[in-house]
Image (cartoon, rainbow, N blue to C red; front, top):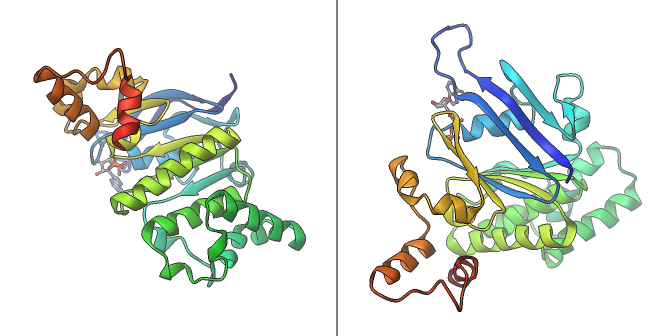
Length: 275
Ligand code: ADP
């Protein structure tokens, strides 16, 4: 397995002059391997967005190292390393720069000096990957929320990134838009081996990841597969996280004598069924 990103004892406080300032991120360590889909979950204020900013070099740690593609992120290499990552943020409307879908997807390529012919090929490829080829000439602002996020993902994919970082990318979408985006990411990961780090407060989405990192008060509370994490349901509820709907349904049914998970269906199959 190849390491794609690691945090090594990383801390960050917004007011670093103040010695007793609360750390937004406090001694965080974890490693993300190639091909993984990692969900980082936690309730508001647990440090998720600060972690995202540290991963893409919008902030630098006051202690510890952030390593991306086995290189320590510094102010000197951040632009080169960032060109190998794709980002998708919360509000799709804030991300659009082009007046049409294809201009928008082409924008970063143009900035990176990709030759015209190759740019056209990559834009078409990326839009096909997100099933948006029919929308080439449409104005981005006229699309639905899910379609907008798919275009934003196409913009990231056109850069041929090794790592896709999403920060609350589905939180402004309706359930249909959310499903569209999440199933797209699943498919891309399966087909292209993209590594995905998705920061979310949505545990339903996290259920589909390979591993979940649970943040609480700036620290990593626990890391594990969805099965391992959700086996500790009470602890999640104690830190203000709602258990996913699918698991609530299954445990309610179990309490009433009908166990869906077992011989005929795994927990994962049940979750996919209920999504
Ligand atoms: P999350 O994304 O999980 O909601 P954040 O990383 O945004 O958490 O916030 C972690 C902590 O840092 C919180 O206590 C928050 O109030 C604080 N914080 C976040 N952004 C700033 C900022 N720009 N200035 C000062 N404090 C901040």
